[in-house]
Image 1: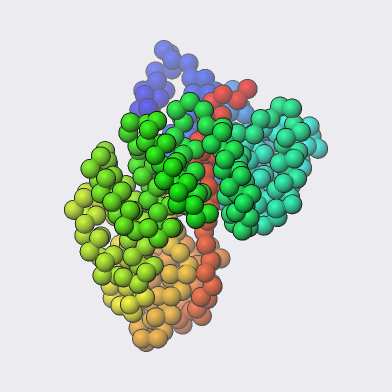
Image 2: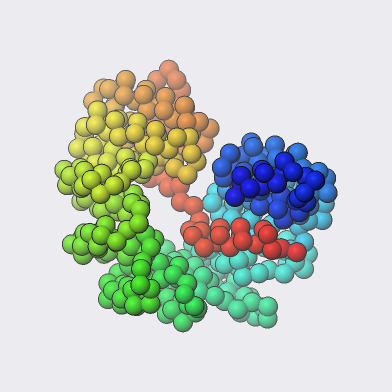
Length: 415
């Protein structure tokens, strides 16, 4: 697709590139060539092509790369140009703040929209609900939902109720979560597979194996073929429920029908074996994954390193961590879990292995993770082994399988 646009751009006498074309092209450039190339493309555009769509596309690129300062600066510029008069740019910024766990800023943006009489859309409400739940406030989340129900322009969809179910589960309100999941089922339309993935995962989270099996059977009866995401959802639920035997059987079923190997599915089983303290089983299954066509991703190697750390095997753990960084290739889609790194550095202290600790610190610096406060606290000064913080931090991003796609789809259609 990008090559087609490049070809068109080289023939301006034959093809007129519209604002929508430029916005789509900017997004493609960011995905294929990176952030700096997308910025250069934006700067090269004629002034007439720099409208709310291309500004919005660049904002979306900044949000996906978590470039907070650039996103906020661009958002202010869009405000000054009068481009922030509808929900989409607010939704994009809200997604950024969700991913950065800055939930108070989501509330501020929602308040700004209401003050300026900018209509909140279904995505705005769903992100806002998620923000309230992430803050641990059932009351705030339910107040937002009440406001949503009173809004005549909004009809809560399956994503609304799956979001609320997820938040209720976090807050140990399983009965309310199950009520929301029943509403999810009642709002599935057409041949939409994604709601089934959420149902499988969330019923697993509330410990309802019978419901997981029921939804799985319904899913398979509707769709003749199940994609990787479907198998990931069911196996993930079974792993949560500690039903490893059925999970293993479904893994074998998936292997027999898959069109491509998704390492995230194998990682679920490896993770379970490591969690149960059976590193040998994890390693033997890893060999099976390789035979099944797996190309391990960073998470695969990180999980294996966790097993070696638990077994106090520094050399093997270090080897896996190196592979994890190499597999990431500088991508921001993977960030090492600070709890694993803390445990590794603690093991280095315990076994007086300063060399391995310095290798890990070097990897973090080389990958520029040291610019993050979380990792900077692990690295410490370069003259001594850092003080170990064993707190289990997480890098959870907003669950956005459907949210991000919806935001992207709006870029070309906003008016």
